[in-house]
Length: 545
Image (cartoon, rainbow, N blue to C red; front, side, top):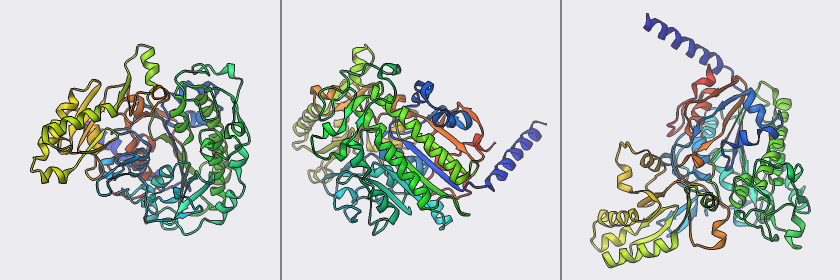
């Protein structure tokens, strides 16, 4: 009898899945908020409108236990994992940048010297998805339905390029030299007319003549610390990290296009560009599904400088809510209320400012790398007669493999000596050699997360992680104790929002664990596509009930 019931439930589920899969949306909109903690949805919800974040939370599917299943938790790996449905061990984007053994230098995860900048004479356009080692859901859409359009955009180059994939019809990012949107010759040899026209409005110049003040009365910001906080960085042109931010005054008579990106005006600028792309590219207007990928970078830039409990960050999210409202309202009007699917997530979250943790007598603090690495290099040279360490990046230690071979030492002896030294360092939680990570099977969840973030060509030969609440810094300076970052395997970096809204998406909350690599497989089923490349995630079945 039980087998019959199971069969009926199984048949009913997949019948429902098939019925839904036959009705593809006209447009899929992917929104990634750079550095968004899950808790922001609830900490700021009393001030959100009913048409922004709350609309997605209350009328769509809210995956309340969505997490990253690997380290490091950075922007590049995050965007790549969201859109490939797999982890860095397969897609190869192991960090925002890494040490390249061939060139003996650090390279950008989307850097590509073989292409040309388009729309600028600066080097900000020397980028492409060349380091991405597998296909994205956007690539799969283009391969299956060539008439589908894929447009992606962000302030950051990696936030635009990795979601759009290899076959994007247009990937655009911010040029710090001109304050305009640009691309590279990998995608096109010239900017479309609509992008040229948009750039011609010189919006950034207008914003830089304005003042960033709080959206509401400063005294009403109750979900944060004091405005003048010792844990925040004072921006250039300011003596204190306090409102208001008179941008014209801070620029000192010069045009500072970098300063613009740390203001909420950059989110508005990106939303304007996205809305322009919907109209100009006729997204969602024909028989084939299109994809629009938007990555809001400013929350990350603000979060690094001011931390997660700052007035600046709260104001950025209250204003971002207004941008979501604008975007959703336009989509419902121009594409149709039941004709698009939207998902919103983050590429990582963030650790509270470690100095703040220390002052509250909470676990956390700083780990100063320069002093440690100098001591380690000295000990390696004493032990083996030569310093075999090429460099350190993202807690990855790179060894000179050729020099070790030439000196006829066993590579394992050198790497294991380094491991044993690092194990003696205070506030190091785990350390592994590359060989250990490549061994299959592990009941150590931390090792497994590092393994999933490891790729032999780009990653180091010895990798370590710090204890919870600790942040790596180069030197112990007063400025090192302000602001914060991310990249760890701990929940403050890995637990992020995941919201779904639109055509066929049920109203529900899902409390079971969902992984960031489940987004692309879910889209695979929504769009009736083949699972792409090295995809390892699984579809979120509750969306197809």
